[in-house]
Amino acid sequence: MEMRNTSLCYLENDGSYLMLHRVKKEVDENKDKWIGIGGKFEEGESPEDCAVREIEEETGMVFSPHELRYRAIVTFVSDEWGTEYMHLFTATADSAKLNRLCYTENEEGTLEWVPVNQVESLPIWEGDRIFLRLLAEDSPFFSLKLEYRGDTLVKHTLYRR
Image (cartoon, rainbow, N blue to C red; front, side, top):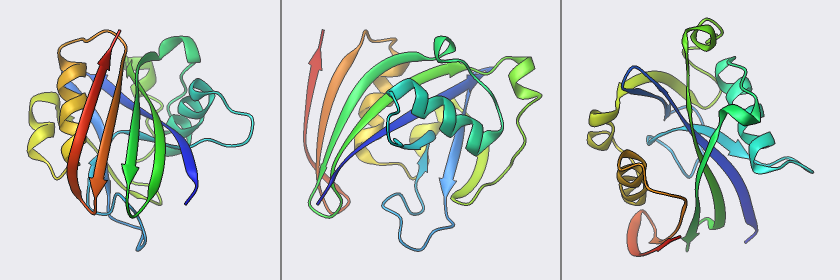
């Protein structure tokens, strides 16, 4: 299995995150889960380049790399999907950005603003609960390794700086 690099961004506005409910693709490791905005690196991209491109492709909103806050690297190890290095960001979607929000859905699923305190009640990956809590605590940059068998989180290791 190949190792993948991805970027994921939690866009925040007025106490809510813009979440993507992944319901469109038949073969999707995130099928039926709620996640932030992001995707796989393209050739030559930095984590910031990838996040900026994915945000624009999936929402229509345009961010500069300087508007993103690089929060963590999350290593997913899966017996089904291989290894993924996810570069985790947060960003604030101000009113000017919200005017550019073009879509309520895309080819992967539907977009919805969800109050931050309700995100954990959605169908999300168990490991996502760990890094979402760290984001809520405004944790300094961290590295988190999540090991899965199927959909079950079997081990997690947190490295704080």
